[in-house]
Image (cartoon, rainbow, N blue to C red):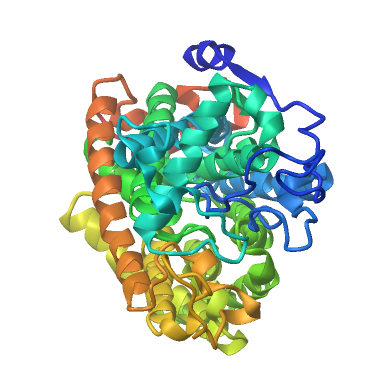
Length: 564
């Protein structure tokens, strides 16, 4: 109800047609042309899929893809694949518990639906708040000229929009201030059309009203914000009530937005490809922190906390669904020139982890037999292990190596780390999110640092803040530009330094907010230990389910019911 009320206050659908395209000719000051100097390109803090990553008109005056209306089919194709990844794949992958199938699917849908509703609202609000912070930080009281800094209003072309991180943020602040001025005086929009379009691009807005717009890109941001919730649900699965899970979903998305703001917007880290830290590592840390307080002691020892054959088959199908859609999830926000490489590398990494998990799982069993739970998790570890900027740089054999290492780490953690957490730290992880998301996420993070560490002055573009340089002799793979991909691109090791900060910051924010959330959930009534991991607590179950429970309660049954 609260979300519905919030959405009713200023959330509207995107409108068409868009602003008329600015003519390439006549130029500024000429008859029929705009009366002000035109576009001031700057790297946006908002992330976009391919087609949105080149700012401003081209040198010949033609428009970029961002300045043309989108084709929904391109967006919707990715949207359907990622919806399957987030909703269907996770739900079926978690449906291995012997008596918790209804609840796994239904409550996963409940939590994800709440998270998506709050996510599209909250992530747009984060963009707005960041703009206000930039204006306050760099413009102060003098918002008319943003401090009269000459770097604010120097006209750059689209291939000259780099500089230091502070210079980029200054120019972002200028554009945010321009957007606010357009809100106050709409007549300027027709007089400065390229400035207007650039203001929308940088701020992530779609018009000059105060409304939050519901459209396909907003749904995509909400879906990405929902993945940490699904990961956290995996940690808490079977041990919390629907009410607790609903509250957890809202708080997890809120914390995700804060972590995204700190790591990506404030620090200038790069984690748009799969989100090894801001999505996978964060979700696992948040769920682990929450389960410390939210889970009942002894719930992990409930005999219903185990799989059943048919349920495990269902979970294996869920694993394959996530496997199939993982490349789309990793590649959606990849730079246009690198998108195919990210897709191919994700497939290669998944191929490798799926093969090597068979070896490690059988090796660790001691009987050379496969552990179904290990296969379900570690087959996907390759997709997580390549979910960083490493997928831009990795050559095919390197992607295979990363996938193999991701599978090894996940399988090893499933065999040794997970039992250690349960026995020594009393942290129960129902589905093994630490094994699948946290540790392979760290593999991706480390691989990304290794790949960006060699980036030096030879990769820098033409513009370096206050002057032109002509020393660029190298580009990123596939012809990508160093300075328009990474916010920190001075070529003195700064890229690797800020990438290295991302995981520690994420662990602190994720674990801290997770523990706080667990404390809140503890105040809400949840299931007793005896009623954890069973559908009969929440659903009207069929006769065969009741017969199974009665059989378990009999002496010599498959499990002895806990007494509380």
